[in-house]
Length: 256
Image 1: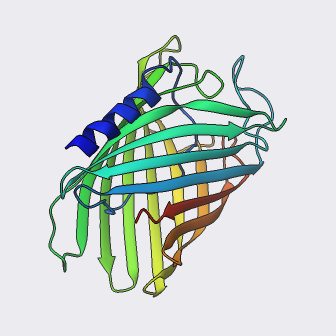
Image 2: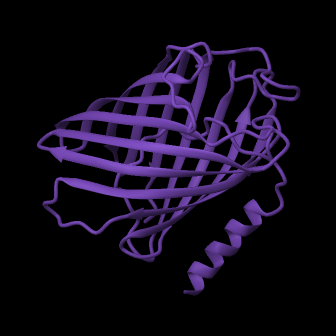
């Protein structure tokens, strides 16, 4: 319990001093059923780099994504068999090679109880956080992410329906919906190939799949090297509002 209180204290120091905003592609990931065991910590480092994207600010003070490198350490802690607490510290290196701290987020992830031989899984993830004005016009925002998946032999299928909304900020807007999916095929136990898609659908009041929403497809490899988990991919955007070429790598650091 003392370790948990220390963890929560550190997270609070990350989040509370940052009167900033929320809406950056700091985390390009389809959530599945991975969880820390109760009382154990985990650390993932999210990395992505925009090779080709929009070089014009989308609003005054915005950071255009062109040639931006983002690094986001994610510390997690297993609360119970079905609950996991997480915290993100967001940073970036812009096209002028200027380093920035872009804010922080907290999350709580739930995965429903399941048996070892159960093919399907489901759960949810709630996030709330603050980011700098360079990545969002609104100081605080939140996201509720559904987690659904199915495994059949070497195949894995997963989908995340996401709802994002503004908690506070000057740029009032309705809640938005995004649908993220993953299909992977295991070549061997610790090596799989697949595709991940990230699809903006606009306002929850009027869902639409169009060129005016983010539509990106990534070819990905999931593997493990010397105890380090890796999710590496290259992505292509297919809409006006998407980055054209993005590389990403999620590095799972051994914590023990």
